[in-house]
Amino acid sequence: MNKEIKFFNGENVPLELHKVRVVQKLHLVPIERRLEALYEGGFNTFRLTTNDVFLDMLTDSGVNAMSDRQVAAMMHADDAYAGSQSFFRLQKAVEDVLKKKYYLPVHQGRAAENILACAYIKKKGDLIPMNYHFTTALAHITQYGGRIAELLYDEAYNISSSHPFKGNLNVEKLDALIQETGKENIPFIRLEASTNLIGGQPFSVQNMRDVRKVADKYGIRLVLDASLLGENAYLVLQREPEFKNSTMADVIATLTGMADIVYFSARKLSSSRGGGICTNDHAIYREMEALVPLFEGFLTYGGISVREIEAMAVGLYETLDETMISQSPNFIAYLVNTLTAKGVPMVTPPGVLGAHVDAMRMCEHIPQTQYPAGSLAAAFFLISGVRGMERGSVSNQRDEDGNETYADMELLRLAVPRRVFTLSQIKYVEDRMVWLYKHRKLIGGLKFVYEPPVLRFFMGGLEPVSDWAQKLVAQFKKDFGDSL
Ligand SMILES: Cc1ncc(COP(=O)(O)O)c(C=O)c1O
Image 1 (tube, rainbow, N blue to C red):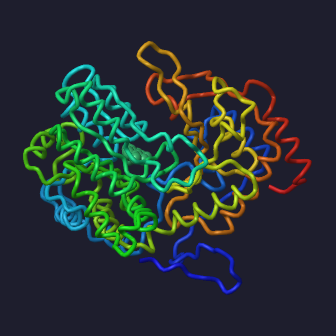
Image 2 (image 1 turned 120 degrees about the horizontal axis):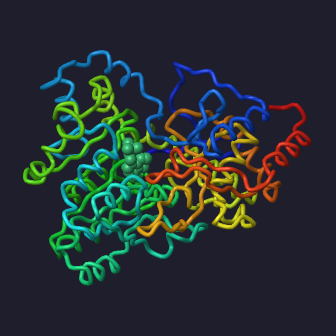
Image 3 (image 1 turned 180 degrees about the vertical axis):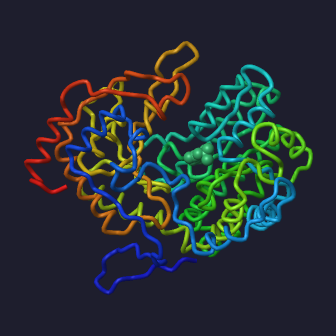
């Protein structure tokens, strides 16, 4: 168990259990430049360049700090098209940590989703039940003609909650859905660890046991998206009484042991790049094997550089280290708790990967048709230089008839990659968010001026519906003078 380190003064401080040995200089550019950058980037934080960004809280994907051991491992990579020793070291790490014998490497998480969808979605209308979608998972399933059904418990949609496992899949609904749809139309059930789009909320081991029972009852494969498995396991240790004296290794093995197929983005799991699909079932391995050379690269590199393969192997073992995994969730809890105490509406309980601001409440004056979460993301960048990510209706895709679909939640995600930020930087985020909350009525809506047909949130261009950004700049100048 990770022991909490108490301060004599009684303060609750998430103490860093690592030291910084390589640093990167940051730039905080003036607010006038940040306004120009927003116009250049179509009020879409994905389109900002890092020269204009102070704290990059867009994502934890591929930007977690690597350990000294990971960097050292990259130096003894074995460059070979086929049969590289780096691959065998990674394969062993997958077997040791995720307890799966057969491993297919892919260049990132969505490539695994592409292969899974290609291998298993065989008929138009095939249905994939899941706790909740992730953008790229949904896009690949629909690309191959499939549909999804999101089966969370009602509590998951309650933004301010103390429920420890809002990512649980509703097993009663799952059973009913399978009976209604027919098991032959359900190629697999997908369970996502630390459910990303509802605020990084975990599921419990007990819930996965219950899902497994339903999967067994009907003979349907269970697929685990393990991209955020380390954090899910950490929250199981914290929140599920049965596991309070367990180790990360035990919980991870228990979870992966219940899945027929485990896939992951190594940009998250293992703090490197790349990804993978693994299983203990040779027949399943064969069903996907041929797709790796087709889409990714030869079976012993799968589109990943050998240096990253070495870093991934070490990073997988380090996922078992609670002091490494706990740092990001503990910083997130600190930020969520301090902002909540100051009245800012946050997703609670604190989850993983980032702190999530409830834009539907903070910007209740902005209708969903004008994208409150996108507006809040742009406004927060403008007044702080901190880049978060919209996780709301801009991130949704249109339905088959081209109609807008509005997200269940409009969230601004402020990602906290592992071991990247210091506590004073987190305090800066808190300070600027409290200021913005006070002036929230100045934030206005957005409209699309360029909308790509697939995954529109990445490169889409938007424009403010009024001169609200200029008004926000004027208020900032009034309150902060010439401070950056
Ligand atoms: C839960 C989950 N699954 C899949 C992916 C896709 O992974 P990648 O970005 O490596 O393609 C992500 C990425 O953020 C994710 O959070």
